Image 1: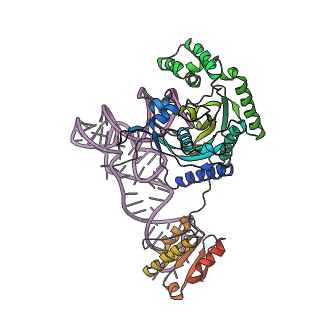
Image 2: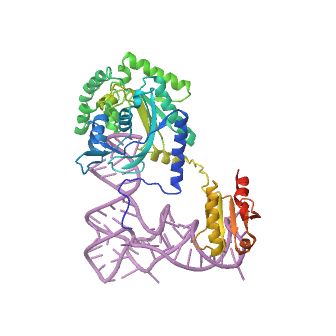
Image 3: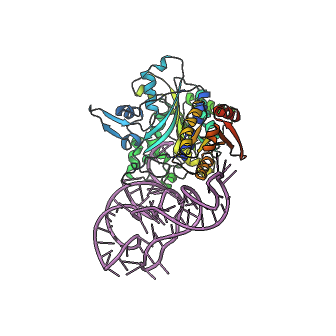
Length: 418
RNA sequence: GUGGGUGUAGCUCAGGUGGCAGAGCGCCAGGUUGUGGUCCUGGAUGUCGGGGGUUCAAGUCCCCUCACUCACCCCA
């Protein structure tokens, strides 16, 4: 083969893609019940939106963006995440001038120039949900509950919810300075020392044992929250308790993107190795202002579809996907094939999922096709049946076969399938 | 980006020391000329990831390259 998909681009093909579709559908159902509206936003945006919204200091912006110049000389970037674009759209269309919070969700591919491996791709897929314009712990917990419920509905049992508060513009700077002071006294490599100055919270997240050992006694944000943040966070935990959603306090949990404030959470799966984060989100009360909008608090999350697929496989969960075919046509000979072709089209028009054997297959091969299609019924049409203006209707589960006049096939099938 | 591992049929993978490209599953056909799933028999399918080199001879050895993968970094 002379072409292959670009490095790191994750693709889904049948039958696996059916599972992929099914888990997206379940999410759409779950968020619909919770009052979130679907939004379809730009796949690429003005580069500055991400630079300001996500933050220049983040790795995502500084070294992982797919940025290009279009023919008009504009700098554009393939979205590396959803939130900045969704908030931009909410502001652009004035959704925030209506009832608050604005509750929206979206989904699709996102792009980061990373070294790919399983569960980490350059084009990958996320589900995204945002509740914008309300500063209420109940909204934070609602979003978490939606994600939690979705994981449960898929049959995943080993997802963990990690929770932390990152403070606000009042208390975080004080903590940040404290932490920097502590970190500067440690024996760290150059890159990490640079991170102390740019994004010190991230150092706490470092997985290397020699770093972990040194930050063991680092000051924690939880001990430096202001009264407002503390009571907000306590309320979030109470409400999680009300919904019986188990969580683990994770005092070192930080999020990679600059805009997060207060509530920060992550969904983790123990069977995914280094790519254990299958979803994450939090509150971003300063984001709107950072991209030139009014003060508008918000909370949301992004869930990794690819990692969710892997988690399902690792837990051995098989999602049942409804058979795509209910009735399968088995024609014998050219005349029958032509008649069957329009019969199948007619059945589809009547709302019945129908397919047929193509390519002049023999009876045996065509029946095999019927079997593999997952169809409940086969329609067998040969010369004898054509003469009789009838078709043989075979129930593939019981092997029972009856003759049905061609004119009544659709009605008979509708009755049997209902 | 850094450091390891892997790459052989559609899929999962065998192929000591260089010497005829293989198995299982799947696919196709026949057994059963108008009946699937089970069973039996037969068949097709390969740039051995790609390029270069060594050699009488390379899937096998060497170099380069691409992809996947594991860990770090980072994150979904």
